[in-house]
Length: 205
Image (spheres, rainbow, N blue to C red):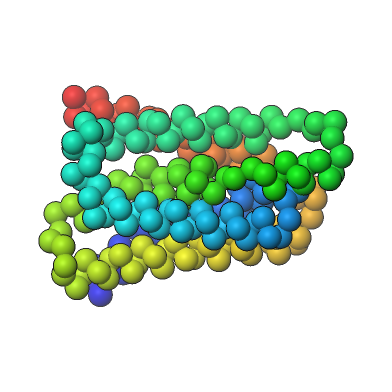
């Protein structure tokens, strides 16, 4: 139980479900309630599948492909930074609210960037690889750790589903300010991923 609790705390801190609220609100702005629910459930399912796959065979796969965790950090960081630029410097297009809503409905953000790299990001994948890598399969602890992963992703799903209620309390102005601040924080997170990746690559090199 101690190991399971420790793993839950680490995963919760790395995934950081509360931080998904402003990001999810910005990325699904103008979309219908059905669209938001679809993106929340689909991104959670994809993220959980990715984490389970990495738990079962991630170490072997990246070893065969010659890909390091540091490469994941650098690539994910660059992608996050590009997303953050759009969030911070977004400009209003000359379109009607109906056109904006239609655009949002067509955009599938579930796999990228929600599932990866926001939920199952480089830090999360690294945590999974380091935890499951040396552990023998088939043990009760192994199964328990997978259940813990599912629980953390479930918490992230709850936060995304609760986003409209949270943003309703904030109001339009508060939501816009929060979206810009979230973009700045996301840019910093992306840069930090790149720094960590470069640092790890140089130290290991």
